[in-house]
Image 1: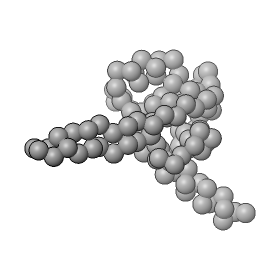
Image 2: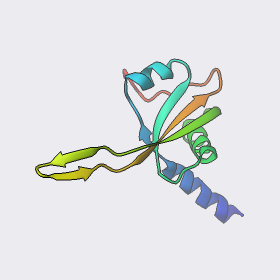
Image 3: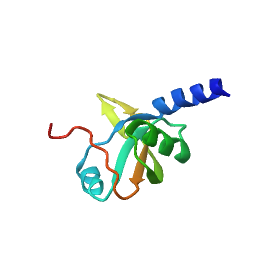
Length: 103
């Protein structure tokens, strides 16, 4: 059982690819929500556990959405950026995540 738990912890450490920083995420951050870029096969429960493990906070809810890659032109050719997955994580009252902004 410990071997499986170790593998699970390793998986949780790889679920979050990074925080998203934009005007929208700054506004929702004031209300206790944070946005993260996550791996494509992650599910809500896994994302919530990963945030709780990495930032030592309690998660109230998770919303996940798939972002379609944009079509881009390079000369005459039309290419496409990769699709990716985004997660909005809502924390329980009294919990915050500090990404080191303003340090």
